[in-house]
Amino acid sequence: MLRRLPKKAVYCIGLYPFLALNLQSKKQSTIVRIAMSRVLSTVLSFLVASFGLLPRQVLRLIFKLSVGKSWSNTALEAGCSHLPQYHTMRNVLFMARTEFSKLSETPDWEFMRENQDKITFLYGIDDHWGPLKMFEEISKQASGIALSIEREGHTHGFCCTEAGSLWVARHVASLIKNNLAISSW
Image: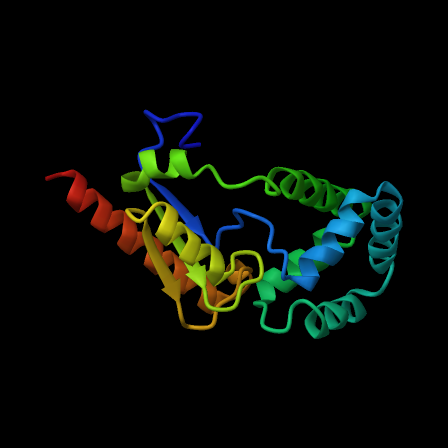
């Protein structure tokens, strides 16, 4: 948005940003293989959709024990009602495929340097999508960008937990408040 609407987008906050492929992540490597294969994407989408045939309590238990160990009840309900659908999973995998294609490129460091006063990033301590290695690279390539590390233990999926949602909302509110205070000088 900062690139497309530079006059309207006055401040960009990247939360647990996925800016480039993490070649050390086994999880990303697996997802890349699935997302880039039309056959594997279709098979996985059918498999995930078949979970939608299970009784809601069984589906909820499967979600809770696998991906949603710390998810809030609201996130679990949303996951159970929306994720086990063929077209939802196809859209997730399409998004992954396009992101992996785009993010295989080097980040646009020149653009970031030119806009460093308008950009801030929040990283987590253990996020394979946005590893601290990228945090360090940003601090070298565009040292004026405001960077922070969340050390409370929230994940890339912070919005699936109440504690993560609240912490990030407070952090973002603080960033915006501070940016408005600086801008009004």
